[in-house]
Length: 290
Image 1 (cartoon, helix red, strand yellow):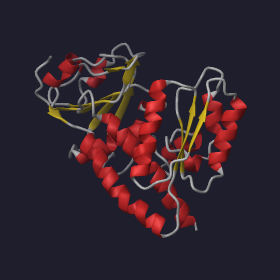
Image 2: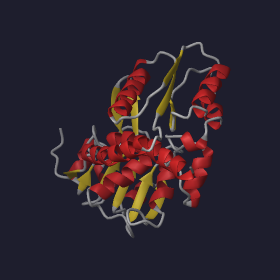
Image 3: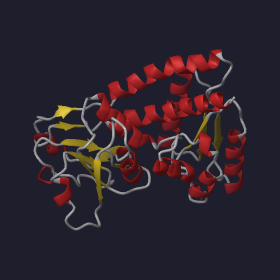
Image 4: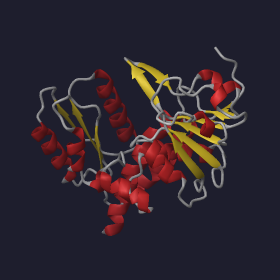
């Protein structure tokens, strides 16, 4: 294993800080007679997906939230999925809805997502919420991008005015993260460059950046020679082979970077925390509307 020289920027204390902030907010809502609930939908029998859902339900209940769950079998139809979404859309106990991805091949996930109430979209990936993000309007923010911003802020890593290079342009991470980090906020306001594997000389951009965020979903794509010495490196992109997690950032990058996320426990915990933050903020916005 490569000798670690970079400061490790863990996501675990960030997530715990978020949960500690959410607990009293949830209690205040409940004391005011307002519900806070995470509704989940699982289609099929994928073991990993079932595990993720169970973890989220357990966390919701530990935080004092309701956690209704709808489990449809592998043969579920599109119509049954739409009925499940409609049920949670109209359930006043539910302030956030999560449709576990991936779904079986007969399910059009994107078409199903379009029927979700955007205000209950805890993933922040509904087109309405992506539009809100682009315009700087309040609404659920995509969880992994929001988690990365929180991670950097928690560890005191200055973003404002610095050059950030995002390697990857996906709709769940690279694209929304670029929108988020370029906004005028103390924990953002960066000069953001987005490159991808279709750019032949992409290392030219990562090599000059002060902060590099790997979001390509290509295992080991970011190597030490792609990073300037002392840069901050965040591994956001991963791919799974079975249950084995394969990150974008090669472990040897730690020999060059000034600060780096760990392979396990980096961006992952902050992503989960932001999902719950979206759920609570949706409840607060609903309460403010009366």
